[in-house]
Length: 351
Image (tube, rainbow, N blue to C red; front, top):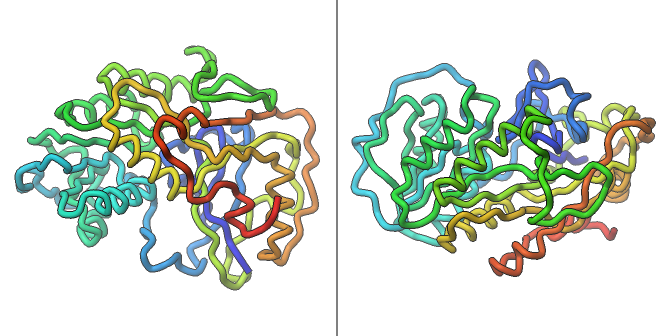
């Protein structure tokens, strides 16, 4: 049977869970209890799950929770070229950005900055020149993208500022944010220009909005990404992987809460498109323009026939509603379209 792997983001709440600990492999993880996250987890994943495709990065996305090891000297890097890229937080999204950036710019150098050096051997094998946050960067880069999560730092905005200071101003600086700050909780429609939660109302969105402001103050760009998901893995269901709601059978949350999704590959291709445009001070939105209710998500999963357990239903009525994102303006300006236009098409079923 099958497994969907995904990510946790503030405001989207898709969580990866191992048999002995929970970790959040995307940039917008949170230590808040699950009942404070508007949309609860979509799946459960265990280390015994079958491996992803050979060309997919096998990582904990943040590369930021492991004990430090020997430092690599950034000063040993060669001269920085006009198409070279620094990725701050080269996890799942960052590594996919690296792969797509190299396709666009053969021969370029790609650099990755992590919280520790634990995954540096993996990055080197992928052709990414690694350094840890503690390593003093002696070069500035024409292209910089910040993909690191706020969960591993006490000063997220300060980290974004440090990344911006590593940009030489010639190409692009991009901060990958979340669509969580959009101030809509009645399943209403929101586009790129929609209002955001005022500073001071929510500590979670405050973190993101303050980091976004830093990026914009440096004349960088921001892309607010909807809920990320990654791939459908075919394998035996007894290997330990289940959609989280499916695994629970029922869930005490409302079925009509709207979710917004974007595949990791599409998030990476959108980020690369923005970087290539060399734009300044702009905010973009990344989503598939096919918002779904929680119930619709589970109906599609059931319709796919890829899981042997049927979800019984949602029983809640009082938790918040969501929002319906539309990024038509982003698509028109950038000339970008997603590879996976909807979650249903990703699953190979009709809506």
